[in-house]
Amino acid sequence: MSKAEPLVLIVSGPSGSGKSTLVQKILELPGTMLSVSCTTRPPRKTESDGKWYNFVSEAEFQRMVEQGEFLEYAQVFGKNWYGTPRKSLDDALALKRDLVLEIDVQGALQTKQKLPGAVAVFVMPPSRADLEHRIRARGQDSEDEIRRRLERARQEMLNYSSYDFAIVNDDLERAGREVQAIALGSRCRVARMEDRIRDILNSFGG
Ligand code: 5GP
Image 1 (spheres, helix red, strand yellow):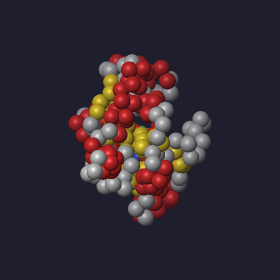
Image 2 (cartoon, rainbow, N blue to C red):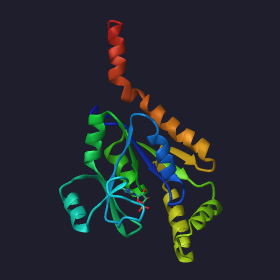
Image 3 (spheres, helix red, strand yellow):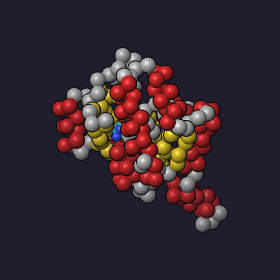
Image 4 (cartoon, rainbow, N blue to C red):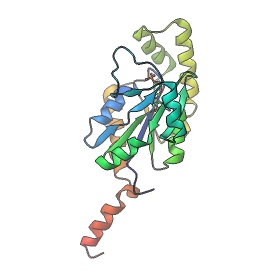
């Protein structure tokens, strides 16, 4: 693992699995920060620029791709483009924070390839019926869209073996504790601790 790399925590999961709530749980831990993605998707009514996303035009997104400004990027649901700016890594490093990426499966695979030390967490609904219930409760989608979302969820979950951890989101309190435990535990991996360990050993005379 490169020394000049913050701890990167990737969180993925099907839409409706409650992954954003679990991302918030990680962000409650001191020393963490969210990577703000760029997207060509138009903002929803509740979203302001720069909080969860930087909303950019397709031309601007393309320029960033050509300039190599993304750590990873992908077209999600065959529609809009989403990308993690490399700058997020620099910022996390400068601020000495762990960086949380809420990104889709394609982005998670790209990130793991580029940063093998990144830790990837997959958030799963407990069952198809449960996910369907949650999607319906939001009341945003047509029958067709609900069917598409459920099929997409199945496709995404087939990639589970590329992830390091899986969390079943059937009990928010327990799932929240689990995701925080993963974040805290990842900080203690020996590969991340080497400088500290060497300092301690030096205090003993090496
Ligand atoms: P939404 O449009 O509902 O906010 O997000 C749609 C999907 O895009 C979600 O699965 C979300 O995790 C994913 N996503 C958000 N930002 C990024 C990103 O920077 N890169 C990738 N690959 N996926 C992202």
